[in-house]
Figure 1 (cartoon, helix red, strand yellow):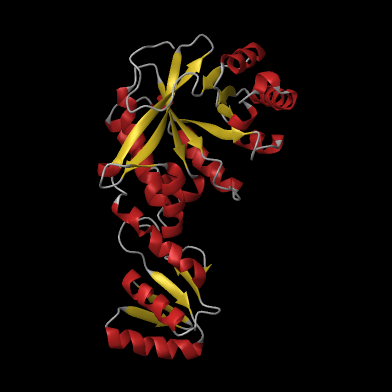
Figure 2 (cartoon, helix red, strand yellow):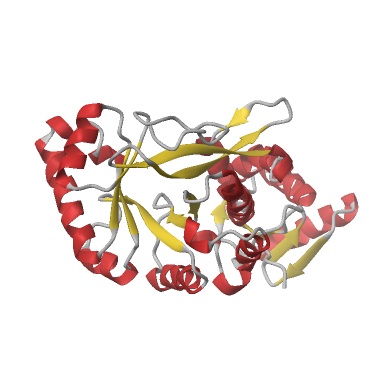
Length: 329
């Protein structure tokens, strides 16, 4: 069954209206030929009808108390509908023709390239890069988070073929975008199998910027990955995952120290305390500790001396459109 929040086609939009407005709006929609359904105090229509309804309510000063939602997502006040319309540009670029993958190296203590974080970059029709800080908020507004997460995840898996045989790929994913792991992650597994990619080379990285309220749901996703031979990492540890019991529940094979505790750590006693506590926790959990956001040799040397095993940051290389030819940095 298709996911009601996943497709690229125009979404269904539901408005919550009072009884008096329903009769008025229904007559308006019939007059202008809009497709719609009415149930109780709810009116469902397509995007064209929704835009007309929004304009009508604003013009007639009838917007007070009206709410809307996309497909089966949460309700929003009508004031935010303008943002939904303004973000419509994202619908036309959610395909692989507009998507490229960049590679940022992750290295071991001796400089050997352990693998790469695979970072999605979209281009508009003019070839201009659209960065994640713009595209992900737009996808959320339009109810396209799953579609965006899925296309990035599938495209990233295909890029593992471009790495050297012993190198791994770190692929970000948004837990809140995945409803049923067995259903929605099946394509990921099929792609890896079809390309004969050893699943152990793929490390799925939990994006911590999406707030995770349902820990059982996250554990189900990670269990699915683990069951199919993939590995996983927790990103930004030290910021959101700050309790030992949460980390014990998730048992991550890899843990990434939040970059805000890495940059300048060689000269900052407070950051050093966080970095050392993180390292102690990683050892307790048998997780491989990774420090991201390294920009100086001083920070790299300090972290290496403490026992960190993997490192990432501009000091080793910025994201590039091709993986490096060399095996060491």
